Structure formats: C-alpha cells, structure tokens
Amino acid sequence: MAGPSPDARRPPPPLAGEKLTNRPSRAAIGLTILGSFLVSMDVSVVNAIQPAIAHSFGGADTAGISWTITAYAITFAAVLVPAGRVADRAGRRRTFLGGLIIFAFGSLICGLAPDLPVLLGGRVLQGAGATAAQPASLGLLRAVTPPAQRTLHTARWGAGGAVGIALGPVVGGSINSAISWRWAFLINLPLVLLACVLIPRLLPETDRHPGRPCPTLSELWPWPVPPDS
Image 1 (tube, helix red, strand yellow):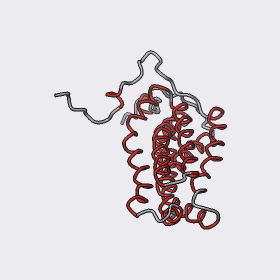
Image 2 (cartoon, helix red, strand yellow; image 1 turned 120 degrees about the horizontal axis):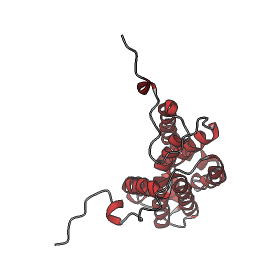
Image 3 (cartoon, helix red, strand yellow; image 1 turned 180 degrees about the vertical axis):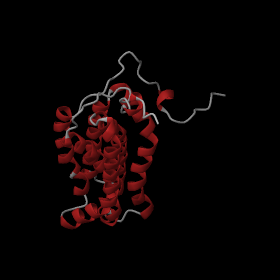
Image 4 (cartoon, one colour; image 1 turned 180 degrees about the horizontal axis):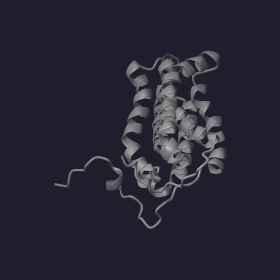
C-alpha cells in the first residue's frame, strides 16, 4: 500500500499575514497568554467587590452596581468583530499594544473613580481595550509558533483566559480584603506596563495591508444596518 504523498506530510502553511518563526520564544508565547489572562480576569474581578463598591459610593442600588459587569461584557461582545478587522488592517502587534494601553487607561479611571457613572465609563473603556487585545494576542501567538505546535499553544492560550475568569473573584476579593477594591483595577497598570516594554522586543509585527483603505463603519459593524426609508 502506497504511503502518504510528500505533500500530505508537509505541515500546513502559515496563515495570511503571519511570519513563522521556527523556534518560538517561551517568553513571547507567555506574553500572549498573559494578555488573554489579564483581560479575561477583569470580566469577573468585580463579582466579589460589588458590596465594597456600593458602600464607597453611598449605597448605590444593586441594579446600578450590576452594570460594572454588564458594561464590560457588552462592550467586549459588541466590539470583538470590528477589533479583529482593525487588527488585520493595522497589524496585530500594534493592535495588541494599543488595546492593552486603552485597557490600562480604563483601569486607571476605574481605580480613581469618584462615583458610579465614572466607574462604568472606565469599565466600558476597559472592555474596548480588552476586545482589541484579545484577538490580536491570538493572532500573534499563531505567528510565533510553527504549525505543528499551534494547536497545543492555542489550547494553552484559551486555558489562560479560562483561568483568568475563574480567578477573577478570588483576586478581587483578596485585594479588597488586603487593601481596597480600587486596587483590583489599579493592579493592571504595572502588568500592562511590563507588557508594553516586552511586546516590541518579543513579538513580531504581522503583515499589514497599507494599500487597503481604512475600514469604513459599515465594514466594522458586524450587524446589517437597515437602509434609510
């Protein structure tokens, strides 16, 4: 019986826009997983600190406090598809870095918020930054791993996000007990700063498409817009 053809034994080619490295850096892979962990953790970090937030803001009502979770989650879901398209046009490393900076700025606003509306605004900004960073980090992970290892490292990347969501309440509650609920957000700042230093050194920029025009609003918006009547 004839064996597989030489073409069948070849690993799959890299995806469009990816620059393959034969020796993936553990630090580079860890950096993309850290990004996934960090933005995923902030989905649930407020679960354990909502009573402390309500107390700080003079007993804010439960419905208002619940928006500290909803604002982040809705923004993340709404902007995910447009953010992925921007990353394809602008380059994934640039989008990953920019998303983390926006996420850090939102974290700063949340940590210093004088009232609930400002906190919710910070959560929306966090969600927008997280949405830019998440798909870009996965694209970068695929760019620094050879095809034979992509499934393994993609699973690790996904596990990092799942662990982040699971640990969010534990981290938030522990920080609130030890210091203040505000540091559940402010702790993101040194982590993002470290990532911003390492990203340009460890992660390659994926190919951009400078010849393409900037995406229009209709291209970025993932849902159909009804025509004007």
